[in-house]
Image 1 (cartoon, rainbow, N blue to C red):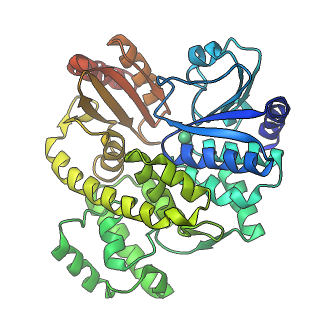
Image 2 (image 1 turned 180 degrees about the vertical axis):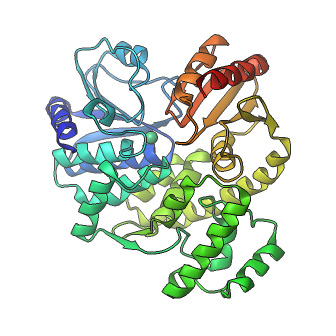
Length: 429
Ligand SMILES: [Mn+2]
């Protein structure tokens, strides 16, 4: 099924041969960082010179010389105007919904959605980068990174991702372990710090103790040391807890589809690797997450430290934010002051506590407000469209995926924006 995508990727090889220097612009989230690292590793192996920069989006400036090859990774498909204005050869490695028409001849646009592949759930930018890297050379050992990016974008291990997983297992780079998706650490800590699944144990230590004693598991044991039977009991108890929390039923598949162990990576647990890279991106330390993906051992401890600090801060914030969630007609929303936590907060709250309506988190910082919108497969609303339309209406801009999108709008238009989003969601739902 990846054949058509490979054919497009091969066009990119021709571009690469023409240039001495490549500028890679990639998104600052795990999908973007792993995609960037996959491309960078492939280029390094070809002894190409390159530079990698991490952007929040294409509203930031892309710098280049006319002779450079510009690679836009995990971005570009939704910004035809920006891409058209770049006066250099461009390769887009993206899986966002292509919008508008890109007026540009010297462009190779690699996007699963242009090749009949589901880019929302079945192939992310990292997977697309993996396909690209493997027409540049044998880079199959990067399969773990491809799947870490897919995990970061909440994708499924089927379709394109399924093919990469199969290849990884066959080559011995990936091992699938049965049981609940948890970090490889003491059970107590793993349950408390887990964000996928979010179990609401942070700050509820007594509840956690009771939970552990009820399922008869020693919290001081390492997750990796649990017997199959213990893991089975723990998985059941966790599933029950999630049901009581009103979690989106789709999460069960995600958290019970097994743990991926990445033999080639510095952090072997794929979910931990994903969370660590995510944390680095969130605290503006993308290059540390990137170094981890480039297998630079000297950054492992620092990266893990960033992850722990970030996770605890996020868990603290979730506690506070939960008290301020408001309800519209067809949406739930929360408006927060400062911080860049809108996206993880929207993701976690929408998946684990409020899965029945689109969830909108808005964080206001100075004169701008950053919006994150989250839905799921059961909610019949296209949030990419909602963010685009509502964003434009108030003089901002938005877009993204059907179930996960965002916008940036003027801070004084928040109220107007919320009612427009609510109206659009009601009319679609
Ligand atoms: Mn992505």
